[in-house]
Image: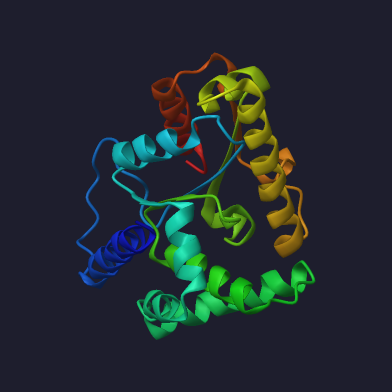
Length: 227
């Protein structure tokens, strides 16, 4: 089953590469369409509904959704990372490498092989634009001035209900462990606190929002961003 899942994700990456290879059409103003080259990053607490929100948001804005599992797979695969990286032309590669150098210097990072692949993959997606990136520290990689960064949170009880598959104790253990793992990941690789609201353009608490109303709220904020 795992090999089948990997093949499926591999096909998704290949489809995305094929899309990037198609010449970009002249920009057309269309209701609901995203701004050219725009990227939205989504950081989230476990069990808040962010995966559904990201999918609906990408669909509504006609953007590509880059999920954390696919990014993780690409970052761990040298072959696939190289394919993604090579999808940029020389000018865009130069711009990407300049901001990665600035990122490493600014945060005093000493990138290992995984971080090098991860940052190159996410920053390549950033250079192509028109994407919603879920997780994997994208908020801390892409330039703030070119990225609309969202943090989605929810009350503990609501998250517990969303994650409930067996017992409440197991659901809460899952929430705590996953949140802790994500916080440790950002702390280790980016010397940052993923819960700090200062890193985000919008922090959305799902306490009073449905999935659809959350999508509408993010789109409204995104359309007002640098308008």
